[in-house]
Amino acid sequence: MENTLYIKTFGCQMNERDSEIIEQLLAQDGFRSVDTPESASVVILNTCSIRAKAEQKVYSLLGQLRDSRKKAPEMLVGVAGCVAQQESRRILERMPHVDFVIGTQQIYQLPDIVQRLRSRQTEKEISTDLESQFTIPPFQKLHETVPKAGSGDFRRFVTIMQGCNNYCSYCVVPHTRGREVSRPVKDILEEVRILVRQGIKEITLLGQNVNSYGMTNPVADGKVSFSQLLRQVAEIKGVERLRFTTSNPKDLSKELMRCFAELDNLCPHFHLPVQAGSNRVLAAMNRKYTVEEYLYKVKSLREYRPDIAIATDIIVGFPGESEIDFQGTMDLLEQVRFHGSFSFKYSDRPNTRSADFSDKVPEDVKSERLSRFQRRQDQISLERNREYIGTTQHVMIESIDGSTCKGRTPTNHIVHFSRPENLFTFTTGQTVLVSVQQAGKHSLKGTVINS
Ligand code: 5AD
Ligand code: SF4
Image (cartoon, rainbow, N blue to C red):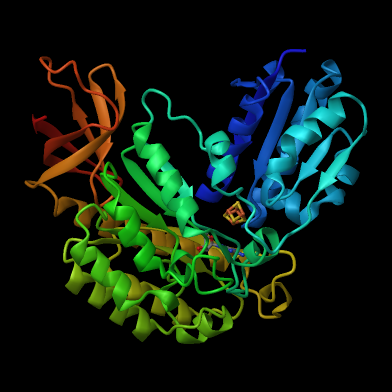
């Protein structure tokens, strides 16, 4: 049987990284990736459960796969990620054509699971235990699991911690990704070194709550704070750009802010989810900071690094959110003037505390608030982006399509530009100087002035 893998990834960067690991693990068994489920012998949906909508999408896609599975009896269909973790056996009950369900901490078992199913040792496989230890193998195994950077690859995520201990009242993550565990420093540094040797130029340190790295379940090599780790990674020769995601404002320290002033390769971009602009709602969300504290942190960050671009996440219509509470979110938007934001309507998630709150906001009110927020954010993003007109930006090229190029500034702004006719040596990962001439709400446009 040909070893072909189709994997579809939903949700966050954590899942994207897990999908890379899955591809790499199966590549060791001779699997190559294909673009359609019909041409695959193993189909995996790597799922997200953060909002109800994301979960519904998984079930509808699984339904569509029923026919393909029937036509190709040798095909294996599997579900991985947060819905797999959360639903476990229930997925098999609803979708009997699914062959395996693999939780967020079990992906390393995948090659064995596929092997057992193919040799008919087992008929179905469910593996969804949550362990309280770091599940990325230590250094010895890393050489096998760090994806080989292919041509054109120039950036990678490096996982520094898994799980989350915050228990925000709306959030499913502690239930799907388990307790917070930090990865040993030496493994992280080694992985970064391997990646830069393979030509990777941009590293994003990845975790649900990177600011609490080393604070809970500290790793064997002693207490190393997130900013200390960041400094060690920044020192590795070849790391041209360094980013991290995601942070909880409550754990954002002065020590970390100082890194933005002192580390040249740390990009001036900060994703700092605030969620709401009302202290009453923030308390009900169990966020453990106030609007005033958030604003103070934003102000301090901007003192350390005046050109920093701050982005956020917002939930509208959290249970009990009044019009006055929502106005607080709109006021916060005016005060911070975020460069960009991801905004969502609140939705109930299984096992979360807020799912049991009684004062739910009606769907139409949520929709109206969301569009009000997004309309204003779009205007602000456009105004913010216009501030870059006339500036010269270092743009790392992300894609080249004929003479059309797309890249990113250190502040994470997308820039479109044309490749000058005499410059055929452009490659992805290369940094060029671009003079910005136009701005839209989602991107900038400019001309290369040098390369
Ligand atoms: N409903 C709506 N949005 C949510 N998020 C997390 N949980 C929920 C939920 N139950 C949003 C938060 C988070 C982002 C990843 O998704 O804004 O930061
Ligand atoms: Fe979705 Fe959260 Fe799981 Fe990421 S950790 S896949 S955002 S539920």
